[in-house]
Length: 92
Image (tube, rainbow, N blue to C red):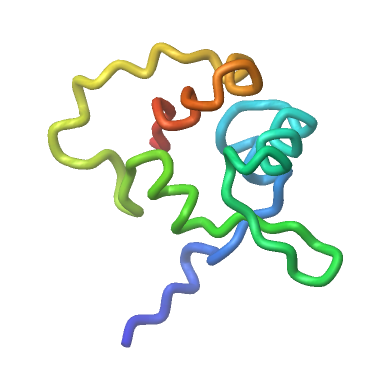
């Protein structure tokens, strides 16, 4: 079994916001509405990294094969107005 200490299993909402290029309050709103998957651990809210990657249709190693030409024409500030836009963002 491999040790996956290179990548955290969860992210804070603030880390998620930075990763997605959106504001902290927008990220909290998207967590609250369920558009960004989250877990409550005691008083903390965390975002499972694997579920976020799956939501964004990526793999841990980068963009999936065949997606390099797929456009990402969504501005992060549009996420609050268009929840489906979360699916068009990709991690690089």
